[in-house]
Image (cartoon, rainbow, N blue to C red; front, side):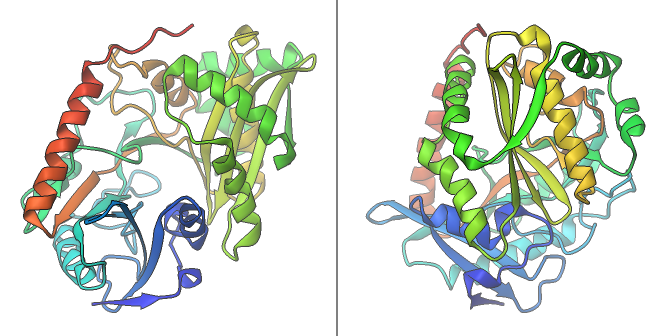
Length: 372
């Protein structure tokens, strides 16, 4: 059973995307946030954020970003130091029941609820390609596809795989976990005079111009500048906002790279990154990530989340460079089940799924642009 709650009462375990901060940020850009408490949460955290949007009359999109969270390290969640995870069957069954309860509380034209599940499964040490899903993850995904009204989505919203670096050591321990070339590049940046500075949001305009260059080069979609300004503005206004840092790397006055990092409930997350084509040989992006890890650890964070990699070391993947870059910093790779839909209105959901499948096919047919 779920009960409506005030948005500012949201109390996630660790997910920034389940916070009142995320609710307010998305509200400013067209989503309606709903907060719920779970009376008998079972394997789940008792707090839940649901986002609703109606792009056209009669069609309502309902999305649960990184939710529901698990209440403990169970049902497939990754344990901090590689401990085995419990069976996910109970969580999948509870998810179907949650979908049914939520359906009674959502707008009339809701055709499905899309859960973007944050349950983390350990894949292995970063840099090792296991060539196969972990058994527990495969079992969870298969069960999700066959339970009641649940169906695996054709589309993903948040990245399914990421690299997590445990921040429980000193500098030498963190460096020892990296590939030797990454340690060399960090030291090279320092020797060549690359400086890293943490700045305020007044530098967002300069950073965003570089971000637009990055998006054009790498063929990635980004938001307007106003969105990233809101990212910082909302954090300063809401009760449960993250600590945000804008970090810039320069050399002799030239802006070479910049990242945005959020610190929230023990986890620092690398949200956005921009880099220039010029002076790439000075390795500014390595210097930025190293500084971000150190600052996160010194601020009391337990984990640094590089937030998104391709799901395997496939050399043909257009984001293979991103995979190599992030996994070179060490840590461990975790993977999530991804998006799963709870169907409410079969005809409308079927039409939406068909359109989504067609769009995904068109994207796959596009040839990725070459990196300049």
